[in-house]
Image (cartoon, rainbow, N blue to C red):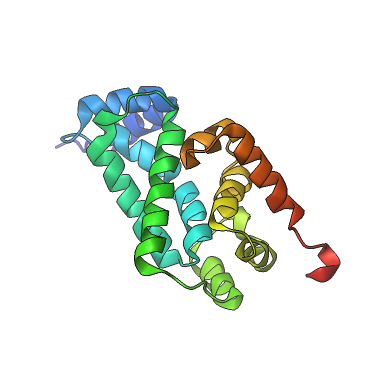
Length: 191
């Protein structure tokens, strides 16, 4: 009997070449019985979302749980995605809301910088975490709103217009908060 694994792999490779809009269209048709397009979406955004959620929650376990909740939400509600914003904005908005809900429920205290460095080095392999101590120190001085904007802009590379949609604030407000947050960066000599 012939194995179907190479065929599935080939389909996944072809799907990974598609843009988000096409993947969403295919996932809507396939789900819940076939998950190939959804899996491509999952792999495309999973590590990016963990980076963002980690910066809010300061815990890799909490970030992973939040991303799992986010991806489950996407799986169950992809048919509700209306396309008024980009899919990327929509999925980041879900992750943002999940992170804020988790922060509210748990009222987490920030993890010590040493623990955050250990977690990031041991469990999250990412270029974005190379300078954890400085980034975490700086982020800890920011409000949740400022931190959200900075994380989406610097860590995720989102445009201000996308961030504005995600955090549900005016574009000018987002730009001003970003500017103010950058002004709070301590000089290298102070770190």
